Length: 473
Image 1 (cartoon, rainbow, N blue to C red):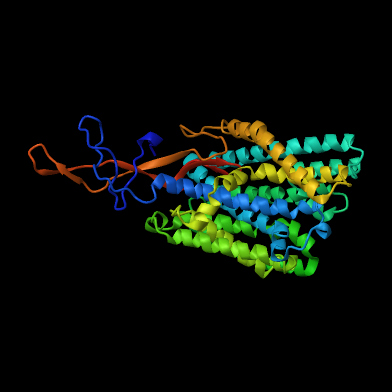
Image 2 (image 1 turned 135 degrees about the vertical axis):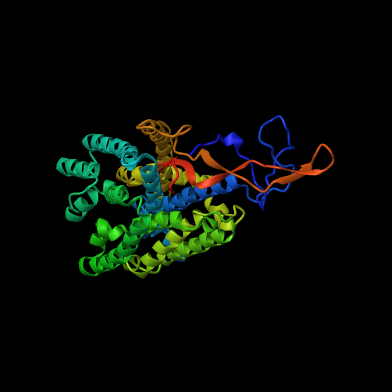
């Protein structure tokens, strides 16, 4: 499909009437003189949807980091916060939020690449994502290996460090921790999440290669897998306990399945539903966000068993509904949309991979060297040190890696792989002819040319997405 440059875009009116400058017969396509503009310009609405997903991931990474603050400020030394304690106990909630959003975005990207470039498309897409993750992970593993050799306070043996590094680097870390809990390095523990993701996406890649043009079959397969995984996780928790249920790919991939299901379902929605700029989408996002907030607060009153059962089911469904709401036009004035689309929260979401990879190793290293510090001071220093590392890694590793992987294989013209949404693809639309005053004083119908963004042709590049083309046939 031919793509017009962003400068060619024109905002459209509430009933399809474009709002532009006065007609100039000698300057190409004629635009209308109507001055009515919509309350939500299409380009702004699309940008809001992208920022909303980043903001949701920003909220998720905040919950994950807060859940691990116990390494520098132990829970027994922290004052009782009542219901607010849930924010320090909701690490698993944050992981589920990541899984749902990641499953949605990556599935959209793989489907788009399959339909645009054939078999090579999704393989290249998966490869680029794997490179972006691996270079950050391998940088961390190199630092951990050096620190383990030089730091006399490191409690792990050389054999344990080598085995842990190998398991993390080959993305089999979740199973290694489950089977060798006493030998696994605790500062690398949370990286089990990346192993689960990579394993799932490898299987998803095969499904997309086979079923991309049979999306109803793919939809049915995902829909059947969700209750099977849910029942299996419940069974594993009852028979083997929370530790095994936390680390098995087959028990933790329900969020990924929900996200993938939404990605396929959105593409099968009728156009009038997918593109209708109604406020119901914002209401769906707001309602889902309230449920997520309720689940977070409930963590102060229920143990981990609730997460693997009813609480976890409610959370995953709410996250899927929020992602579904973000897939259709949103009203940026809605409170929930404004909260999640905030600049600072969206930045945290864009940098969430870096924060996730580095926060626990930094916390544990600082704790070993500051046992006599007060918890409050140590926590402030830990967060400041984490912020500094994240800024440096984002600038000197994450973004350069994004640019490098963007050169792996052909990419659409104008593609800008810099980890941020920059370009909106557009499609021409033809509103009804607009009456203008003719040279003889009579009204004449003059055709109008306008462009509006296509929600399924966004060019978004971040650590969870390679979505650079249309998903629909």
